[in-house]
Length: 588
Image 1 (cartoon, rainbow, N blue to C red):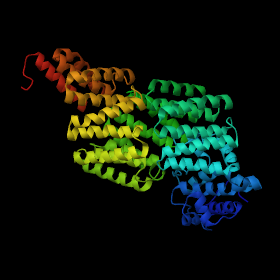
Image 2 (cartoon, one colour):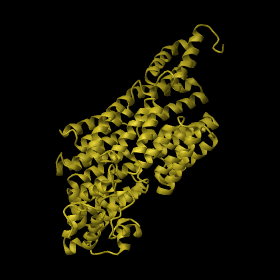
Image 3 (cartoon, rainbow, N blue to C red):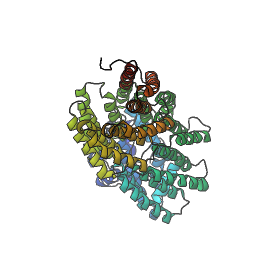
Image 4 (cartoon, rainbow, N blue to C red):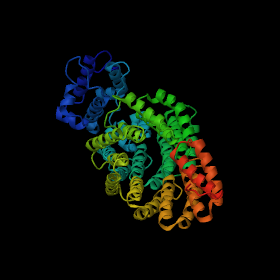
């Protein structure tokens, strides 16, 4: 019989409880344990021996998968035989297993994030919010429901695994089938049906249609409120994801208001959904061109996240990555790189090396280290990261394609022709996997157009700039920051190929939109302002351009610093205009 507090005193006792769990599950063969847990047969078998040796190799993840697999296997016959009391006892005590494993593993250690727990497929992929919902009051209800509908539980798990393997389109299709089958098994108002719709909307957005995902999530939120109540976890999850989709399609101000409303709904400041809403608001500030304010808010938030989730939880680690990214956007590249290096040392051994957050952290570190570390170091790190993502996730996984783009960036200062070829491969891979108008594909197209511009000239890049700009207008909207970034690059190419007068209208509309969407102090807005002043200079003369040169340079000095490349570029243009107006030869 299993104790109420499993594994309370030694590794020997922990192993005894694992053996009791296997016996309660019907003593499945080791091949069966491997199949249901996804852990290698020999590895799983090593956890059950009668010894006082440590269980596992320092990571909780495979241990948790074995426990979850045994529970699901034991409950597969629930409809025929009824619930298994002994297994139910273990299921209630999984948090106890987790914490006792951590205690036994040594002071200061924390378990690596577990594999996908039963039911997470009903909520979509891991985005921070899904697991929070499962850890709240819904978790036990889903575990009970899933045990009574094993075929739907397997379909939900397959959906999540398909998405995690890098096939979000296929995951969205499976999620659509999951919705239909779940509604047939229950009804449209049942929490399981609403949870399946969460998966469907989530993977629809991940597959490259964030606008459709926003529409689906807004309708889902209304239904959750009607059938479950405004305070239900699934309702809160819909609010949280709706705000995130608003942010992803460029509705930055609307997203910030939605996050604020969600935070006000719960008076407990340390409620996990409130903390996630605060994190979303801070990310929105970074997107809106206020990286310093975002970094300040994140510094305050990180203490609360440490307390609520733990310092090594993926939510907390992602927040620290975002903090470093905002620091980078504020022009403090060295400080951002140091933050990411420290974070890498902190989470080492706590997150599995194949965990998306671990790989994301490495990617951000490589990018922040570009031109901070020696070129050879950055290039080596980029190559190793690309090799690792390819072997761990597969060559067609979106993150692998992202690291391929990073490799192209690292090659930029070494061999621009090779860098362009790598970026072309990354773009082709994303187009093949995700479709030609997926936001990630369009980001790769924008990078490739810039590489073509640098290597082959503006006239060669102009067609790709035009198609990318048009696609981003359709997919993301005309005022999305990424659309406006491409518009600025397109205007630059038009300026070079067709002259300043042809580019001037696009410069003006882009600058006006960036001031409205991002704010006048955003680095992208300031870069466009300098280019606009340059075009005005060419068309209407130095006296017409001088006021914009001056205000742009003053703002860049304040926001970016006097030595930032953009500040120096504007300073040079300002000096040329002043010389012309003074009647002096600008070449002297």
